[in-house]
Image (cartoon, each protein chain N blue to C red):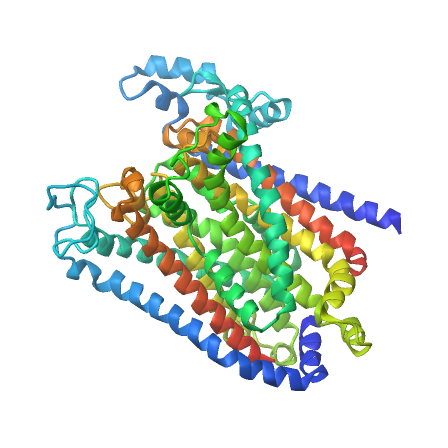
Length: 318
Length: 294
């Protein structure tokens, strides 16, 4: 039994790694299909052909593409991510400076969003097809389709412009005490939470309703067990796997969401760094950031997958 | 494959509660559907006729003050250069709706036809295409768009290609599993024993039966693509000036946010109402179809 679980986990891990390899190949291929190349880009239009040729050799661009891919991949694995052209700094140093900020933002959002989403999802499932469920359904359905910048602009409008409670922009450098901390993080976290909670609540509701439809809940109802106990003691333990799956999948939304949120609030995180890198066509930095985000995404999907498999004995024997 | 058996079993287990649930469902479903349909049709009409109705030329500096509020001359205020926001939104909606529609139709078309062929193709081809597809799905769409723009620069054809590469794999996955399920049904096996070719089976037996789910899926893809493209424009990496879609309009006027300018909220609300409307409409349509199907 345990052996087969171990095998499945190992299988999923290896397929995750192979997917990541294909992803890295795709990202590398896109960024090196560039008609002109990085050397031309760095030196600008007015460089002499000799200068460009010299820089190409220096950057290793004269080597064939497969060789460049392998050395890039080797660099990724050993932590040598290359040189950022626009910042004249090693990419790894730049990213290391920004990553904690992004992780903090994502962490706070997760800690706040997950309990709210679970509560809403469970409440919605318990009041299935009744008024509360309908209202929540329309709200969450609308929320998942809302662009982040609409939530963000409305939040700024209400809390910063009309009420004057919060500053419109985030500055992490000026944190002094818990009050400042809340003032800075309130709006970015609120914006991220809005969509995340909606998504997670919908998936939680679906997971619990799926359980509530099964015969053992019918049995519990016939025995005269009340609705609250039916959900909390009977359905919830069985829905934990699917819910964990839903939470992990929803969290992957954060990867896209932070890009907009960090930009709109001037938050110094890794997504903001990547957007600047794209605007400056700083390819080494773009590649490294993209790999980081794709890896994070794959890890979340893998966790979601494993939660679903480990919680459902039937899936273990596929 | 087991799904059909499970589905057909479910209604008979609790017939009474289902009937009453269906009856209770009718009104609110219709309400959200009407709201959704109204919003979607409104924005489609704006995309088609908006530029003709615009009171001012799209780039004209018509007002003296920037970020002015609503007035009789400028119903949606003016932007950061003193241009009429109403005209700019009417023009911008065409880019937002048009680009997303093109990209959504293309991704569904490509995804669905490849998915159907993969389901009917030899196993090795099916597996290798599906494997590549899995890898493409695991690149978040915004990430792919950022990488594409960093390599090729932002242009309208590139944005469409990017959206198609991002969203065709999802359509592929769904239509492949739909087609694979349909291919096991009796009438397809009958056609096969009759000696029909693969193309005939795909076009005549399989395609008509997966048309509705694929259409619903295309609606979802439209919503995602609107969000992706306006997000890219908001970052300044999508539609480039002097063209402007709704996302670019939010970006242009973001400086007016601290004054609570109408010029920021207008286009942001425009995108929101479009995507919410489409989402409500699709959800009510697919929920309704699900009930009929059962």
